[in-house]
Amino acid sequence: MGGGLMQLVAYGAQDIYLTGNPQITFFKVVYRRHTNFSMETIRQTLNGTSTSVITGNATCTISRNGDLVHKVYVVADSSTANNGSALVYEVELEIGGQRIDRHYQEWNEVWNELSTDESKALALKSMQCEVGTGGSGAVETVQIPLNFWFCRNPGLALPLIALQYHEVKIKFTWGNAGASLNPEVWCDYIYLDTDERRRFAQVSHEYLIEQLQKETYTSTAGDKKLNFNHPVKELVWVNDTGGAEGVKYQLKLNGHDRFAEQTKEYFMLRQPFDHHTAVPKQNLPVSAQIGLSNNTISNLTALSDGAEMTPKDAAGASSNEITVAGGTALKVETAVFDDISVGDTLVLVISALDASNDAFLPTASRAVGDVFFAGVSAKSGTQDITLSTKFTKLGSANTQLDTIDVGTGGQGRCFLHKVSNTSQSEARTSKLSKEINVYSFALKPEEHQPSGTCNFSRIDNAQLKVTGSDGGGRIYAVNYNVLRIMSGMGGLAYSN
Image 1 (cartoon, rainbow, N blue to C red):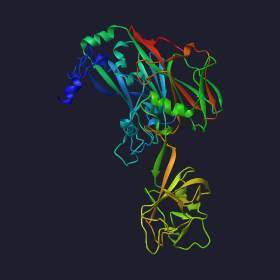
Image 2: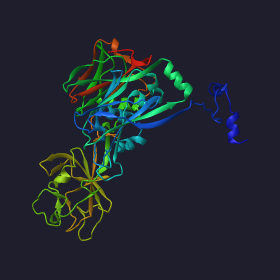
Image 3: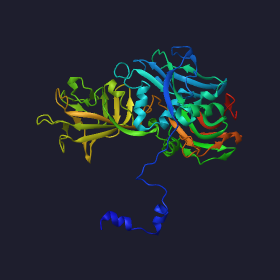
Image 4: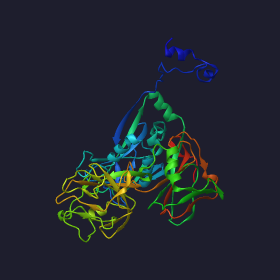
């Protein structure tokens, strides 16, 4: 009997819980037929400021070209824009003159960072002209997706066919994208077949939608009041300057602790890891090897060559030697100095040896490929670097360097790398460089299906306790509400 058949007949009482009375098979595909529809992208008319400038405003009345409206993009042609996501500083949705939702540049950057899969992160950043711009790449069109509820889920597409008596308007406040742009608005329309179109036009609709609320808080420690309403599924707060080490947060509801006080890493790393598609890149401390000049690697050169990296002046140093004064002091070019941070590790790699002019002294245990390292403990002036220890050979703590000898014109004998353990400077999907903190009441806050909320309308006193200074910033709350559409008009079921 073959092994496959042996597995098949090895069937016991426990297997009844797995395969007894089967309801599906993996070997016969099942599908469901859908209603007939089509889609088309159509440009909208903008009224107001047509060029993006600070405080410039424009209004777009969604035309009735199709039955439903789904995705909305802001588009602008430019080869010089370098921060496209800043084009939409603020955007507001109105139905029948009532504001339904309002989003901000910062929130769009935060949401994209949390919800964009890694496979699409660089593409989104490219679409917003934040990489490969200035004529150096092929991306010359800014394309910014809006993140209203109907833009993210086709099942929530806004039924224009049922809003015969109410106009849908999108109001923009333009920002500075690094260039003067002429923005356009493009909408994806959905066309329904006759029967479904008739049903959408005649019956009333109730949509469970998502809204955004915002509070600004100061940098001082203490309790920050949260004036939010409606069932909230998650809180997200953004620091302006980044919190200091040891900052802690705690949520209080009507004087009761919602959870034990936690360090900021719980909200920056653990919560996004548990509840979102991605952990924000700028929250992650990473080890990154990068060069100290415009090239990937900086060469060490002799004093007489105007070295990219030279030591402090030391008595008795010849033109063929680079002496590290006391073994822990270096002097570097200003351009290199700016690339080095306290806490970084400098790594020296021997790339060549010369019998008459060895690359390193002392001569013990030296060989091509040997690696020596030292930490950076302090910086001063514009060139002076203090090392925490002498350059020490990897794997041999007893072998340390006092003198580096690369010979006259010795370019290429030794290479210098930097290994840093600091946070990324900007996000995966934008140029946002602020810490993102998350606390989710929902199991899966990115999904439309509710999986947990806290009804802030029933909370008299909600506070976020901050221990330590985190730079201040803004707190966002994502809440549910109900949009009712009947008799050709639409409005919210619950107000603030």
